[in-house]
Image (cartoon, rainbow, N blue to C red; front, side, top):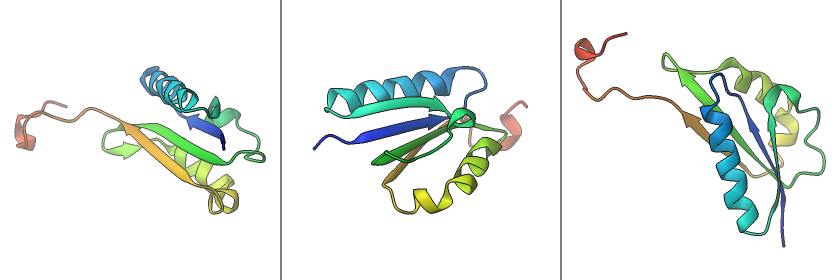
Length: 101
């Protein structure tokens, strides 16, 4: 049975929004109904069978929009399947002294 899935994302530079659209495309190809929305614009989770949360990581921390979103919809999210993805850069060197800030 096809699910109605929300892909809620936060994006500052557009990369996470692009990945959210790629997730939508894959879920739709699997037969699901998918809506993609920036977290700040979501007004309800009613009617969704699952939620995917996506956000960037800056300076080692996930953006605050995720905490706000999860806090706002905590009770509803506890009753739904939830998946998440995070987008960020990782230094090539494991030696922190070789990574320029």
